[in-house]
Amino acid sequence: MSSLIELLIATFILAIGLLGILTVENTALARSYDSYLSSIANIRLGNISECLTASTDKAEYKNWDMENINFLPNAHSSLNGNKTFTEVLNDI
Image 1 (cartoon, one colour):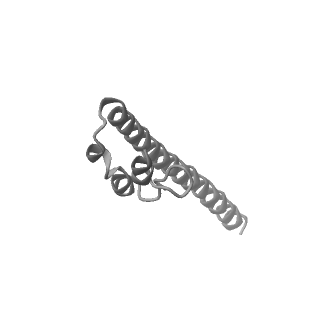
Image 2 (cartoon, helix red, strand yellow):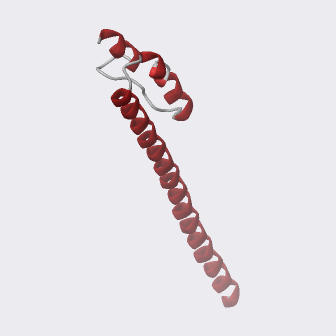
Image 3 (tube, helix red, strand yellow):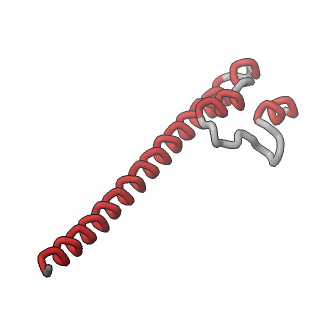
């Protein structure tokens, strides 16, 4: 009888340990995805800054907002409050 209780306690401790490992793995995956999105955002910002510096032709970067929505689905691509990047360019 006592060995059955010991087995039950050992199984319970093992289950708690496995749940902890799964939690750590899930957190690592979420941080990895956040890092990926941050890298994409940095690349996109470098892209638009190069376009703004190198060219005065608005046609080259007019679709920047829509491209950001495709690359970063949860991102908000707006500057100056509620104005999109294209609207800001039109004000210039």
